[in-house]
Length: 306
Image (cartoon, rainbow, N blue to C red; front, side, top):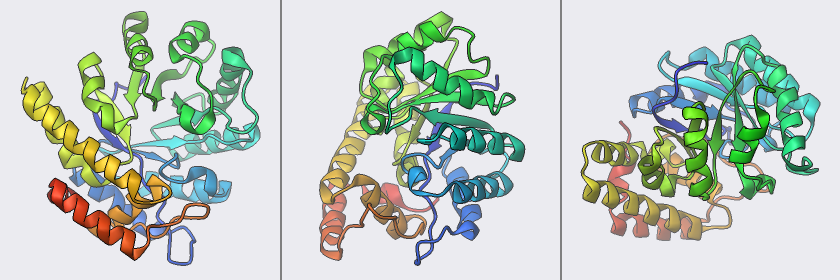
């Protein structure tokens, strides 16, 4: 197992051209921007990266490009989840072949796995396709509908998945997350995935986090972590509340938050291009209103380039 993650991992947006095709040439600048902003990893082709809206070939091309051009200090974790087990295994094997840092896989989101036993079987097959890479189970009930306790998953998995090193935990159940952190003496690398609850996760012992808003507001969260580590609870709480207000404002601005997040990223930090249907961007009127709200909150200074 590689060392546990400490710090922020961004979940990058899919860089697309104006015509909707993937924009491989944008990846290098994107990767270096993240590293310069103090981000320690990139969790690619996940929810924020519209992974399930991309073809398998596109996901492979993006993974190759991220691994090729990312600076050495930036881990590249490839999400390989798919509704087809065969495709997920293909993506995992490809990630190993190109030298990715790790792979991660969410539960199937159309036909659901049957309980924890079925979930373990699914993860087992995907992890087996990349046996030399660290494997993370990606827990995101809002997208998969799979709400089984991850603590129960860890208790039952035992050594059935030899390369299972941790969980990307994108859910609000802090009791379950805390139990996972403490499980088997802290054996697993628990990456927290709810940006608006980062401070709560830190208080439980979390040291690594994966998030959408770390793409464009990493300095804010780094300040939060710095304050927490220094024992300045007031400052840490202030930073977390600012993040919560920012996220709430973004969520309320349009139909889907990922599209709004990407619009903000394009305007202030790095141009990643459009989203793919069914995601639609904010209208000019919606975005203008959003900018005024973010400005009044004091968020915009945290969104500047490094």
